[in-house]
Amino acid sequence: MNVSIIGGTGYVGLITGLGLAIHGNNVICMDTDLRKIETLNNGELPIYEEGLAELLKEATDRNKIVFTNCLKTAVNKSELIMLAVGTPEGKNGETDLSHLVQALKLVANQIDSYRTIVIKSTAPVGTCEMARTIIKDHLKNRFTPFDVVSNPEFLREGNAVRDFLKPERIVIGVDVYASEVIMKELYQSFDVPIVLTDTRSSEMVKYACNAYLATRISFINEISEISEKVNADVHAILEGMKLDKRIGELYLNPGPGFGGPCLTKDLKSLISFAGKANAELPLLKAVLERNEVQISNIIDYVISELQDVRGKKIAVLGLSFKAGTNDTRNSPAVHLLEKLLEKLLDTKILIHVYDPVVKSIEEPLNSRVVFPKNIEDTLRNADCLIVMTEWPKFKELDLEKIYHLMRTPLIVDTRNIFPYRKVYSLGFRYKGIGIASKRFETIQSTLEKSIV
Ligand code: UDX
Image (cartoon, rainbow, N blue to C red; front, top):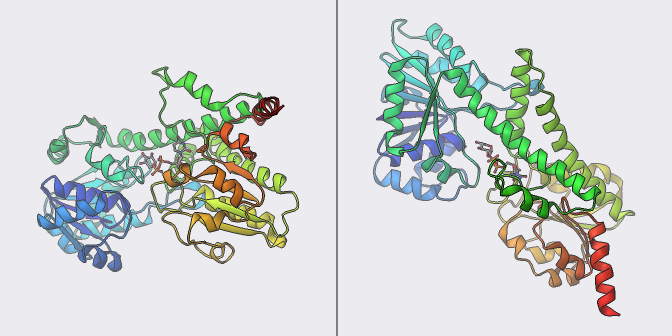
């Protein structure tokens, strides 16, 4: 099938385009970002994703992919036009659909025979119907037939290529039978369950999934806070929960709260458009609130532990919103730095940051922190180590070496990557997520008994 992806060099568009190309389709990835088009035409990638370079090479070698900034080419050469343009957060949490609307108008102006228009971008319920109206109003020839289809994506950063090539299901929202046939043909070679719904339900599936995932994270972070207050251990609690098949063990890791470009944005959008439909959503509003509390609790702890912070050094490991990616959009680590520097403005606090793939951030933060070239320099003479992401190279650190490198042995482990009993027995002060500090007194007294 001939497929064009509008917004084809963005995160979703590029992975979708390359994935469809190696499934045998002739794909045109169109984008207005000339720089990215040139990068891709030079065989390089504008984003980092494991396995993406191999996809690009295979699709290029098989002549199955074209990158262009020409919309006319993209629309005229393909019978299926997929829109994967950005739908960023707008005012009051609403989704900004301006890029999508603009793309729909331009596509409508181009089509002169039947096209299936697929909305891949995450957009509020009712967007396909809006798209139908916009296309009808902007058709070059008002009798040109077309259909609009919803086809949401479920890609996780750091895992996106696998998520596209081996999805657990494909969701397709159609309102007429003709486009159902075309979409089933497009995804037939994936050999996974296809969930066929109307467009509104398909649009809602995406929001329901992300809202549920965010709820799981806020839930386990709240259980962690209780665990800390009642002298329990969240790891043990999770052991007792996960064997219940209704709960499972995935996506229940305590942490600094969810970040990234999607979960927060999609939750706010859902709350916004549901509110317009007179649904108040107290639970999902609380999920967002819990997420805010999570990072402020960590900051309050650091400031309270450091007391007089003048001339002290904080080491932060991890800047992206999670391990496995270089994306710092809505990163808890960036929020932590912003809030710490705001609270400690006149103390000239020194913050050293190390991330395996992120080597700088936007101003004004960038000039307020130091980026040492390695972990050792980052930790040397530090008065507090804050672990913000769970990169394997952080988990493998030699704790005894860290103890002697730091000036004050204090670790705030927001990802629980270190074995807290060992950390404490080495003499660190340690804060994990969901681990009661009282548990350390038990370890301490056991240690003292063993020394006596
Ligand atoms: C998410 C959804 O998983 C994906 O299906 C959707 O298409 C886009 O949004 P993504 O944001 O890329 O994907 O990453 P994800 O792995 O879901 O992590 C989101 C945030 O939650 C990260 O900050 C991560 O650190 C955090 N998280 C995730 C936890 O704190 N605990 C967990 O158990 C899982």
